[in-house]
Length: 237
Ligand code: NJP
Image (cartoon, rainbow, N blue to C red; front, side, top):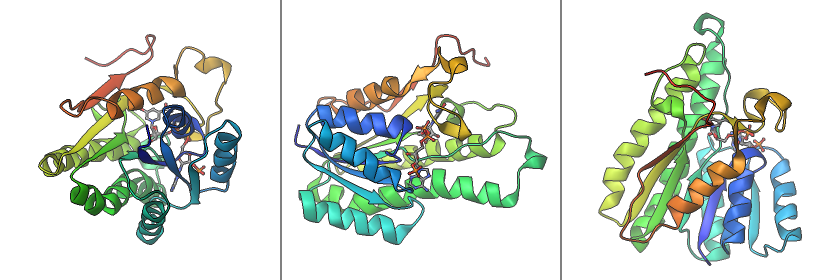
């Protein structure tokens, strides 16, 4: 309650659900999305009785935009307790069909975005000697799949980044964790949320529940990683 959280990629899908659940727990929110839809999410939250919501149309891969929104969040709310690096994009195709532009773009959003967002909040969290940084990575940050080389590579990168970050941040009292879901019914990879074939997939709220669990753990407890997947999803061994 009364904690201040930045959630990236909150226009829709998992990030939007995280924003709603954090608001239900009394958090003050700074929400980020690259499209105008982010303001719609803010409006919906306010209509549902969440008074402390700021929305920023910004690209997580843009350092200047992210620094500015961190500064504005501090000005507005006075502190930042939680960063949820959730914004991400995905596409699935064979390597030789992947263009260099697509490769660069997915790394920009999924990896550079996590780096920039994290770097922007770290000085403040270090100064206060508290904070929680949660990154929505993926089950494919832990094992590989065909036709997902670019996406998988970004999530392996994010796992590596978060691991190092966790060790650097520990001495400042900052907790770092990743949440690694399997298939989630959202708009991810140009799909449609609620499509009939995704009925048995995880729901955005399942992932948001994990964020709440991780963020609200008592101070003496660190949850490094939560892996969750639909019961129907089979895994390589
Ligand atoms: O996807 P989607 P999810 N700057 O497409 C925003 C991971 N994950 O909720 O730009 C700022 O419904 C975009 O907002 P807007 C996945 O890798 C998913 O499923 O305004 N924001 C939207 O709010 C990702 O890290 C699955 O349109 C940017 C949001 O990101 C996270 O879950 C499985 C942006 C994407 O919403 C959330 O994805 C898995 C930018 N440059 C991991 N670019 C799954 N769904 O199956 C995009 O293992 N956004």
